[in-house]
Length: 200
Image (cartoon, rainbow, N blue to C red; front, side):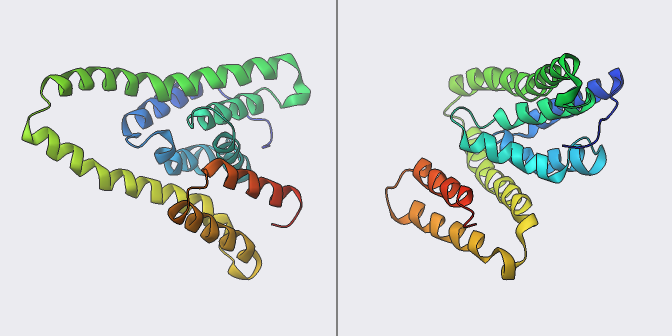
């Protein structure tokens, strides 16, 4: 966790507006905007550390439920840091909940409204050639955003001499997903067990 931070009402508004803009870019889901969230929260504002940012994503991806929960965890940590951390008591908890509300509303509301409106329009105009071309053109964008997110998350493990076990596990997991019918959750559980045992 970072040192306590001070957020003004304009900082909270900026956080909401930034996540609202990211909502409109989250074509493949909120996870595709993780690189810009990292730039904003860690590099620019320094409201989160690199470790707490990565932990938010890892925890949300391994927990049951929608993947967008990592945004709630980031909002929680920003609010908690603004309140002085766990030791600060009730005020920190309320600011953590406020951070969740700000980030989740920002990331969900604009894209939900846009999705509702455009889905209705697309359903009524599903035979248009331009609409089919647009859908086909979006696939490479989503793939590029997902690759950039994976690159960001692996950037802290770029030393092959010391992190070879993680890279090996990643390669074996990718092969298992592509070549077998093993459910992805079993691979996540296996990775968690190996990490808890100190083997990674």
